[in-house]
Each structure stands twice: as C-alpha cells, then as structure tokens.
Image (cartoon, rainbow, N blue to C red; front, side, top):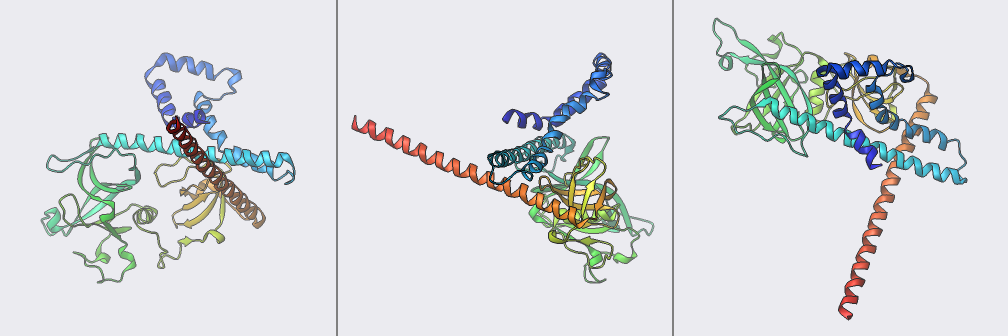
Length: 381
C-alpha cells in the first residue's frame, strides 16, 4: 500500500513532467502521439493512464460498499468484505492526504520564489511543513486622499493588490512582471480582523468616507492589527464578485448567515440538498473542491452567483464548487441512500483507525515487556 500511496502523492509531478516533455522535446511528443494513436490505447492519452490509479482508488470504497450491502451479515464473506472496505477507505484517505501535502509543498516552493520582500522589510521564510496556502486572489484597495497623495479634488484612488492567506500568515503584495510579486505588508493570521461593512448601519463603522458614496461593490475592511512594522494597518478592499467576498470572509473568519441577503442559503447537515457531478471539475483555489463525474456532494451553502460550498460524500472533503457542474438530487429515497452510505464509510474508517491504535498500544506494551524480561535476565547472569 505504501507504494500505491507514494505513486498517488507524485501525481502533480507526473503531470508537470509530462507537460514539460511535450512542450520541450519534439521527438518525445511525436513518438508519444503515435503510441497514443495505436488501436490498443483506444484513443486514450498517456496522461489518462498516469492519472488512472488515483481515479480508480477513489471508486473502490463505493464498489466494496455495494458488495457489502448484498451480503448476509452472518457470512464469512461479509466479515472479509467489511475488513477490505475499512482498509480501502483508509487507503483512499492516505492517498488524498499525501497528494494534498505534495501539492501544497509545490505551491509553497513556487510562492517563495515569486514573493519578493523589500530590503528594509524583514523577510519571512515561507516554506514550512505546517504552512500552506488557504486562499489567494486579486482585490482592489481603495485609498483616501492622504494615502494616495491625490490632487485635483479626487477623494479616492484604487490600486490592485494580491492577497495571500496562509494557515498562519497573511501577505499583501503587488504584481511585479508576469509572475513575481512585491510584498507591501504582512501580518500573523491571528492578528487580522475582517468586517463586512454592508452588515452595519451607516455611521457605526469609523471610515474616512461614507460607504454608500462609493461606487465599488463587494467591499470588506481588512485590518492588520500588528503588521511587519508593529503597526495597525486598515485596508478597504473591493472584490470583483459577491462569491469572492463571501469566500474571503469564510476563509478569514467563522462564516455566518447574512440576514440581509435573501438569495444566500445556509443549510444544516441534516437538512441540506444534495447534488451529483455531471462534469469533472478541477479545483482552482485551495478552498475549492475537485469533482469527478457522479460524485455526490452535500450542499451546505449556496451563493446567489452560482457557487456552492459542500461536503463530498465519498471521503468527507469540503470545499467550494460551481453550481453548473452538478445537478440536484430531488429524490428523497436517493438522498437517504447516499447519507446512509456516507455514514457507513465514515463509521468504518473510524473503526479501522481505532483497531490500528489498539494494535499499536498492544504492540508497544508487548515490546516493553520483552525489553524488561531481557534486562532482568542480564541482571541475573
């Protein structure tokens, strides 16, 4: 199993290496094209074969679960199938986790090369085993006359900034060239605060201008309570979409229901709708959820511009995904069956982990007894 997990963890590097060879080695691309056109390949690319192990392992728990439901609980096959399902479910979780770790590390290495700190600013070593990117993206910062040194009667200026939210750090930067970023400020994650100004009545938030006089929409107020200079820095930011704003708020703080937005829906886990993926979707942000065709997802939150937040039933992974890649499951019978399947898979995974922990404790205790016996014999002799 360790070999399988290691292979799946390298998926992102396999994909990148194949792409690099195709683009830089004409002979390789030519020969590969001929091989992929062979009838035995059935018009499938090498990329699809390389990705197949990871894609297939995610389907194994569903297959074993379908077999288990058709077996008698008193049969020997039932026990064997149950044990196999527990191990396969754990294997899928390990494959997903290792692949996620490798992807995060690759992303952090790239960002450490792209983010450039000013000479007078203390640079932060980004690469760490406990740090990864939670969310990133462009936002428009609104600057007052004093901040932007405006003239000719202008009250507000705008500049595009890139915000990077890590597990323990927030970095604000400006684009530099095609791939680089110039860091203008940063702050520990536990030293930031964010406010949605639309949830407050006019006059309750201290701003250098009236919020209703600004044409920009989807605004939030991001405050670095103690930035790299040990100062407080308040920034008024505007997102391009309502869903971007809500996802930033959710990433930085505990998401709450917006009472003023009648189109937004937040559901409890026991009363949430379910959708099934009709198209494959590859996550574009760390807070998004990749989908394979036929994946079933519990929808926990809906935004008016077509973004859903949900939990993938086959492994319990949560994230955001676009509505138009799915169709809603309307049958209460099918929804109940999916929920029962989710419960079984999660319960078996928990049971397997408990068994492994007990075995480890017993093994550790036996090892201690053996060492003690050996030392006693040495003392006698």
